[in-house]
Image 1: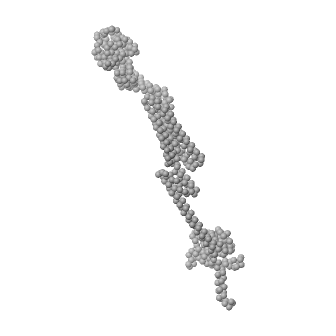
Image 2: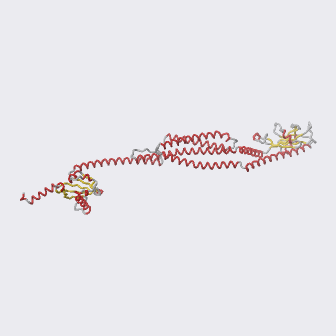
Image 3: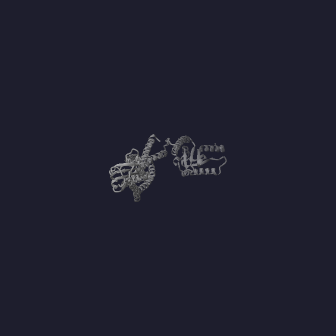
Length: 516
């Protein structure tokens, strides 16, 4: 793989990993319960993911445009690249669409389930139950305070020690005796050095003519500030003025402060917070649905773009050795046996290109050897043809079907026929040489069926050939025949007419000496 390809792959992988990380962070921020964390981070995370998706889209468009340009230019292997990229993209796209469809339905139905009427009713019931419990605590303490105020009215003298006993009996944190204006006359309990609590105007109004109680400090700030200012029940009851003696006279009030149990306060706050959050979410239901659906859609876009881009890269990497091999096959089919490039990898495709390069080199060596052999054969054929052309004897070569394959000038001279024009035809098609052709055929047949003594693959005989057309009578030929491979037949003959005529003259002279 080239450096540019490696750099390109790393860049794409980094972009895809960044997009995936941002999507995960975005989903994580949506699932948090820390106040409005997802609302604070939603905008910038959304736009960062949009920017990553736009970058991936740009890269995909550029890669597809380059591939389309290659196809239009008819560049070799472009269609294979496009097909591989399409297959890989389809493999990544179909599962993504299935997951997106399922997730879309799941999110839509889940959000609707969150705001079901039964859930709203349960939250209302829980809130009413918590409020009733706290109201019962306040009412119970108000009754106890009224009873304690009546007992206190029977006392002739109210001392701090009496208030302390009363505080212990009520299990309160602080008990105070107030005048008509709400000023503290006596107090028992409370934190050391702390200013005693005083009832508010609202509690004073509710307690006119009897007793009243209310819950104070039931909020997150009071829960976090410590026990001194935590959730508490405050009760106020009027002290009947029939026996108590304090300076100043006038109406007196018994004020009791009792802390609320931490578990009850925490549960009440939890129910109240859940109800408040539910009401806020119910108002923003459509926006919440769009937020989740937008997140899923953006994740799908990032996944699809990433899969398409990886499909292009993987298709290119897989198709490169195949294209290299296909181009080499096309060159070899066209006769180009020059050394072929090899794909530098250790997998099977790289081994295939190396094997193809070795095979091409072997073919080139074999062709060079064949060409040398053909050149040598042509040289030998030329030399043989030169020798045949200069022979005084006639030479005729017949193929396996009995047709004239080769003939030398000596045969044309001896037989006084233009035999070169009859090359590729049978000798018996020439009327003047029909008997001679039949005699040669019979002699070859007898050689193969019943050879004479001393004959194996060749024979020798004399034939008389009539030449009435030139007025010379008869030609006597000494013919030698041989069987060649592939059932070819070689015939070599000489004109021995003059030798035979001389021999006959000598023999005649010997028989008639007196006539000389």
